[in-house]
Image (tube, rainbow over all chains, first blue to last red; front, side, top):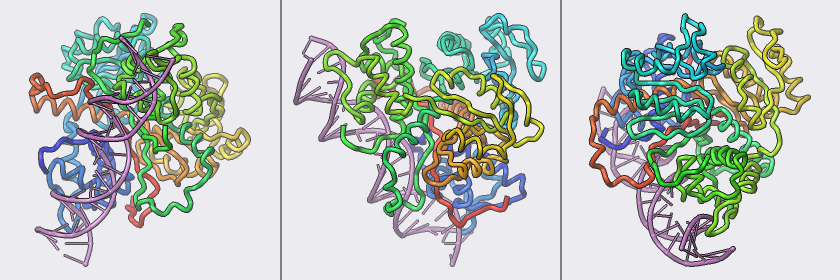
Length: 247
Length: 247
DNA sequence: TGGTGTGAACAACTTCACAGCG
DNA sequence: CGCTGTGAAGTTGTTCACACCA
């Protein structure tokens, strides 16, 4: 465990491991080996061990990992030992669905307030007694409740505008359901959730397959643990260059 | 443009470029340079050119790319020149929100039918005249309408079970909103949409920042186009090994 | 002149293979 | 003996830098 740079993909995987550990714990499993856990997470066991090794040594040789303590360790690494308060901006269909999505609270995320840019939505009652607030109230709420995370689900044309407000209010992380890439300053992180882009990668693969036919069957050079990943939403960021389109 | 292996991330980016090209076209812009387009997509211009170079030579030196023709080319590469029929499995809040999400049809994806595993949902009327069908009707519909793509939004416990059915019916690509990694045979692709995992990466970064303090300001070794990506949902696949947990 | 196309250098990430230890 | 931890090798992806050409 040296102080190397930690791959972004490692963090994603920690999050996957964490879920399986929760499940194992709930099932009363006490100990798990890297290969068992790796199998569930669909990764190479060496990968899992390497991922953990960035942060310390948590296993027992010849045995495996203690489920409860590894779960606790990983949760700590991810910063998930406490709850996180989140604001939701955008009370359209997606926003509403997210509000009632049980996975958020299961992972410790609590929606503290819901906002919308559309005056027609403001004031409406939603799930769990949430009332849609006008976006002008954002700064007050964020500061009062010391919120660092935002979920952005407004129409894409408004994405940058709202993002600027969020940044201004001190939000440090944005989960962005809009289809435009937003520009944020260093120190603020953005993650994109873009359904149709992911579908596009599927159509690409399917189209390729039907072109290539099969040349796969004879291929025995493939490794035991074939990599065939489901992919990224990559973004570079923080380069406010001189270029800009008139649109 | 040699017949090299194309990075998965390249495909994702093509999809991003494609959207901006659509927008430019709608705005009457005729020609665009790699740096303009790259700026919008938040990537390095060299990256964009390299991405395109895997597939051919589409630009004019000293000028840039013809918006309309590049759009057409990329759409062709992604397989998006025709519509794709899609089945939705899972008529919960997420499923319903997806049904009425305009982005799908904008990209040429048409929901042909909606299914659910929960008998209570079956028969209900949804948006656009969709009636929820029982999952037993899946094979018939998929075969009759020759469908290759599925969106999976059932409770996570049911994910593998439903995925197996989909694969059996000949589905080639699955967009998976469930939180468990599913196992599918080679030739079938899966993309994960997992909100909370992405939130976890944000909490990780935020937690790190507050630990590290700032050592950032003096750092002048950073490249002009800083990479600071928003990340993957990686999955290796097709390794049905002997390991298996009792759960 | 200005922007594309691309080999070559570089950087990041994954897998291997085995030492080391319970 | 079995499984972890990890340096080193291998693979994949990104950026540079410049030749080339409209």
